Length: 252
View (cartoon, rainbow, N blue to C red):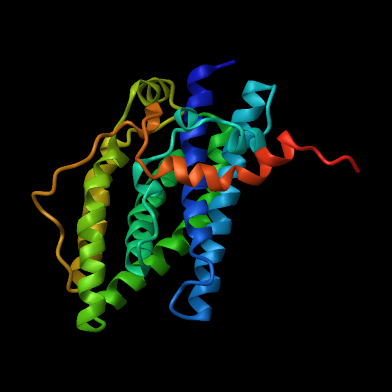
């Protein structure tokens, strides 16, 4: 098994999976029904992306499935980014987190469409169509909340400020990334930073919002299996029923 390729697929799948789980938790809590349906569909798109990458990872390992990887791994075996693990404190947090990830995914999958690995390239070409819709939607909401009421402006700015410390990890290349870059399968996340910042800054400015400054970044080791304090609770809920069915199989 190509361990580096396996690890690379995990990080692509895990962040989408955990973000999908967070969005699923928010179902029925959006400001109105139309948005509730829209954000749920975004979560389903992310779940589909996660399944595609985890299926590929499982095929490399050969003794597991995408479900095994999603529901039977321990916290330290996940490779998700810290940003996607942050709870849904309110609608502003959900939208700011989604916007940051949408800009990132748009750049990431655009680059990965040129991957020398045909499976990764194919999944990325399929995913980019969904991501562009996600980005348009979240950008519109950022601007809408920024120019809404004084309350909406304050809340979205606070969410942006609080989540900003997690964003630098998006551009961290560890040893697996560097190996994948060398052989033309992966892309440099570090090289995405300037364009990500430019896109984010433009939307914030249009929404009358401020790009945070002088905010210290958190550690960058989600890809290495080190997670936030929120991750264990999330996995406990996400994995409860699948693990319960294994521990107590049906007699029927």
